[in-house]
Amino acid sequence: MSETTPAPCAPEDVRRVACIGAGVIGGGWAAHFLARGYDVTAWDPAPDAEEKLRRLVAAAWPALEQMGTAEGAAPERLTVAGSLAEAVADADFVQESAPEKLELKRSLLAELTAATRPGVVIASSTSGYPMTDMQTSAGDPGRLVVGHPFNPPYLIPLVEVVGGERTDRAAVDWASRFYKAAGKSVLTMDRELPGFIANRLQEALWREALHMVASGEATVEDIDASITEGPGLRWAFMGPCLTFALAGGEGGMAHMLDHFGPSLKSPWTRLEAPELDRALRDAMVEGCDRAAGDRSYADLVAARDQGVIDVLRATGRLGGTAR
Image (spheres, rainbow, N blue to C red):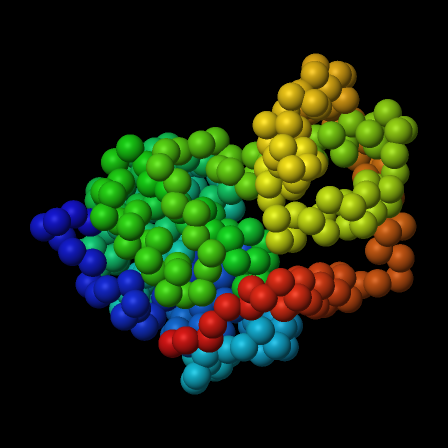
């Protein structure tokens, strides 16, 4: 995409979205776009992909209806194509959600740039690879961006948008406008950052949790409760930085840093990842099994979805249903 190869339509005029890869993330994207009133064409090489995708959309739809769907939105507007070329032939936007394998991403994005109409923006859902590393084989890398969602994409508003070294800035701006029109909360990043922003923060918490389980300092249940009953309640509407600023009272962040800054040198955290040996793996698996109890995967998904909806509703962030 460049000034000489404009996008086929304005971001607000997109009608058909192609979802390439129909697993948990790709399927979640498909459900989100359907609920926002788009026509969605999906493709995945797995032989049972269509059955799993339609089951995922059906399971997500009650939650999406609670949040409010766009006029005319319906699961029936989902088409599953028999080939990648067929899936993207009429697409106004492409969301790629293939497995996290760099060579696969490279070859797939190269194939997508060759198969789509000139100017169509293609976004990758990658959770860690920079676009610079993924666009090396593409014949038209200027229209390739990262559109990194949080799971499940049909509920969590966040999407982080960033281009690679060979991405046109116009493509990044177009994608950001499109995601906003599609009801997402967009963070447009000025530069590539390994793991992006939210994953980096989440990974720090995850590593510390693994250390505590590995050393017998806390159980899986303890760790989850410490967040859901503690800082997670504040983080639902106020991020960690502003939360810490309030800890400084009327003096704000300045007082907090002056007062608590020395504790940053205390050996509270261990950001190096622990050795994921068999004992730690089993402790994490067994802890999650205990926490789940007799609830099935479907039960847990339903509970998570309802919880997210309740928080979004309570904080006034369900968003619009326009389209």
